[in-house]
Structure formats: structure tokens, C-alpha cells
Length: 118
Image 1 (cartoon, rainbow, N blue to C red):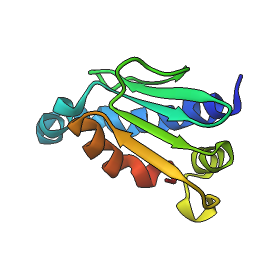
Image 2 (image 1 turned 120 degrees about the horizontal axis):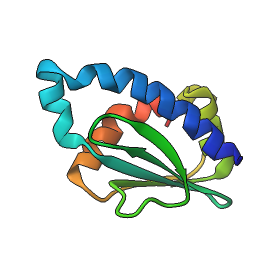
Image 3 (image 1 turned 90 degrees about the horizontal axis):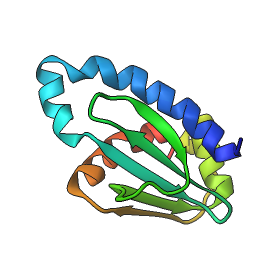
């Protein structure tokens, strides 16, 4: 199992636990239009994706998801630290390129960015 895939699997479980209860009632009416989503995380040595379906199931996938909502490119060290700690103060400095491919991806990334340590 790859390092980033392992970390993203842990992150996906946490996101799912927080997301699913929010998919009912008024909150659900605001969140559901942003689903499904997929994000691609690219480093010099690994590419992994985070995929969220319309029911709030979240999974990590090796490689690049087709038609991503967001692509995040950075160094392996920076992404590994971000996913491991989810604390931006513990993430080494370095380049971070965030390319939103959809409006819903841009909005979701800005909301979830702090939870990813980015």
C-alpha cells in the first residue's frame, strides 16, 4: 500500500463520518448539490484520488480519477505531512497548485482545505 493512499484512506473515513449525518434536512439541501465529487492529488512520486459519491460514501483511489472537480499538485513531503497531521502548521513550506475544474469543486475545496492540513 502506498504512503499517500494509506493516509488518504484514513482521511476519507473521517470525512465520511462527518458528511453523512449532514445529508439530511436543511444541511442536506445545501450539501447534496455539491455531490458527487472527485479530487486528484498529484506529487512527483504518486497520484491518488478522493472520491465522494452522491450518498456521501468517501473512498481513496489509486491513480487519477476521471473528470476531477479539483486537482491538487504539490511535493510528496508536503502532501504526506498534510494528510498525516491535518495541521497546516506542521506541513513543510513548498509549492501547492490547486486547479478547480468545477465550481462545486472550488467551493468544496475551500471548505475542506483546513481539514486536510493544506
